[in-house]
Image (cartoon, rainbow, N blue to C red):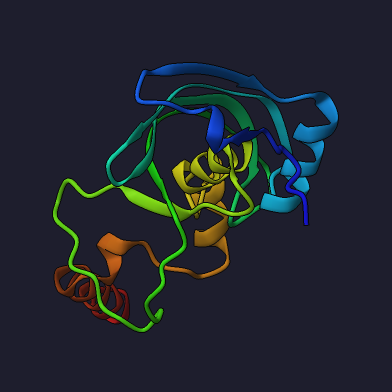
Length: 175
């Protein structure tokens, strides 16, 4: 299946020298990405990347930038969000060992993606970077009010002292 924002780069055109690559989305690609990621809209999405080969594979670094509108996780109201996310990926040849083998990663290890069909897809990598950078539970300004009206207590009220304060208020109301 071809991703909504596909920008394949043939690996045989990538050398050890840094190769700058700029990619941008079309309106149709932005609409398709919004549907895929459950967004109200993707108003802008682009990436400025640098691609180069090293001993371990193909290194891709740079930035993904954009502007999206997410639905509030409580109300569904529009919540605008900016994307300004660094990219640091390594594309590697498919492994010849079993997928169940554990691999130790160091703190500075890059996310790795297997190379498929002699190309790397910079658009798909940028789209996934955008999606991972977004707040998974965005809240609109009136989300707290809606939750309170529905009887959902806040984190402060849920803490032990918050519960005691609620109990005290109930007891004082009875007295």
